Length: 336
Ligand code: KG4
Ligand code: ZN
Image (cartoon, rainbow, N blue to C red; front, side):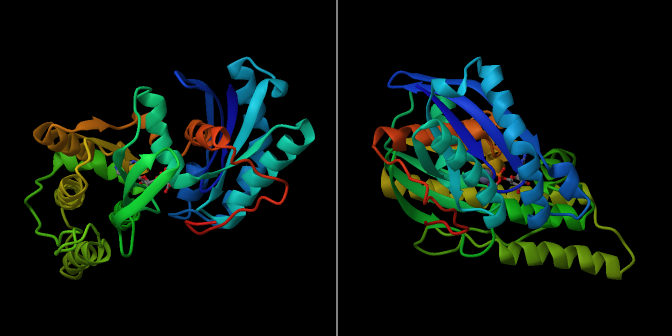
């Protein structure tokens, strides 16, 4: 069946058509209208501007997605939309658009959790992937570890107690003058620096837990930058990028390794915007090789926010009969 996926939780409006069945997982189109250039002027996402930009883009890109897929609205078996978590005003644009489309054409409507959608990107890139597995979701708003029992059954086994990894990258990127969002820019810059230049506190919380904390690391890096500035110096940005990235990567790898041991998982999936980080991809590839665990990570193009992942996640909910009515709402929180 063909499913339309609509994503508008943050600063990317996306619409995609995927074809899904028991043995088929095919992306027919995946159109993304990014607002990054607009928000870059402000150094971060401005929620009200994001909502307005979604309103301007959502209809156009949905029709583009259908056209590129070579199908009409009547060929759709379901419309899936991200309903939570995210920026409430931004989410409401996608939800109301999806609701009106589903209602007016009598198409089943499916609600999708954005975090689950990130992981569902892995079902598209690795069609043979089946639960159970351990999932590390690293994005601008989340850094969590989940055991995924089946496509709809998740248990959070650990996660950040404060900021997310992506937020930590973006914050330091902004302070050292990298364009928003800083994650991708720091990733590249880190290759030019010495990762042993600065000793920074690990985001892996010590003790018998699978939790992270990025606030202490962020503050430590900010203190280094500010102390240098007070001395009239500028910190070596490449050295900081290398040390900071290495500290984050080692912290994520440590707790993921602990989670693999604790859960006995034989497959690890990494997903979310920060899953595009090349250092993290390499480190987790090495970890999984050492542990004899299968490692699945979507290609870079499917790590950031996109409609295809929403459609893929929506397929499993549709199959379980979890469809929605016109009273469907959005929620900023992780749970509806
Ligand atoms: O999943 P995503 O597109 O949006 C959320 O759901 O939050 O993630 C965006 C985050 C941003 O913080 C961005 O800086 C980060 O993903 N990111 C990266 C890289 N590419 C994107 N972080 C580190 N290295 C990258 N290569
Ligand atoms: Zn996301």
